[in-house]
Image (cartoon, rainbow, N blue to C red; front, side, top):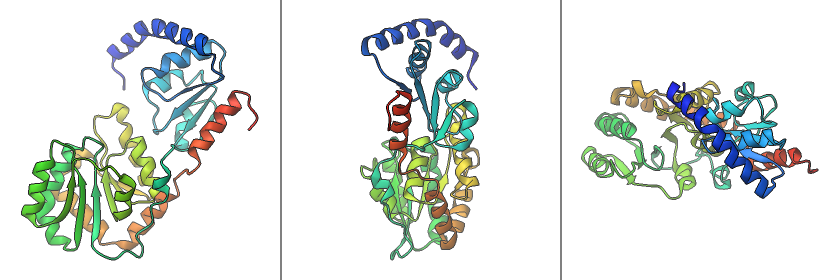
Length: 295
């Protein structure tokens, strides 16, 4: 799903970028080159492969990004998050995505007392469509879920509107522009509403939390939707596409999930089953083996 203009620009820029990358490799003499995708990664991986250096591609999404797809035929090996990603690479291992240890230490809420807690976030800048749908759903949500508490990271743009909306609706809420301690916020939550980028998906799995994923519709190669589908198939999440995101649909979904503790528990367990606590160590071990070090 890359435009023709992008392909042409890549072809025109690639020789100079590969040359600059080769000069850097000559200067630093690396034993192995690890590419994590993105415009800076592709030329370096090309240069390393042409120089005979071992290369390791890291791909956290189900569908590899443009740069990793370009270098896939020539890399020595790939570390991926999802088994289905291996079809893009010759040599592949499912390692998962490195995640802070604090996410793995998030307890489940099986014996939790107090209100049902919903955590909503859309990345560091928030997600306007999610914020708006939640604001519009509050009057009906309050009628259907009387024992509800919301923790909502809105970003800067919708912060004031969201605060006022919760107050008008009489819904207990903590509204933040940005949440500094996300593992602590996860620990309080019975259910998450969030995007489905690679890092978020990995953190949800590490914490073992049930989630409603609302993929960013304009993400490159629609990768967020494919990520969300992978967890939905595993029974760890429910996907609600942005094109279907209305206050009515959101209330119906939340009411169904938040009143079904057994299902939430099953979803959380399924999410935890997809976690990879040793991801960083496994990726490092792959790199060391490629560099001919005995681990």
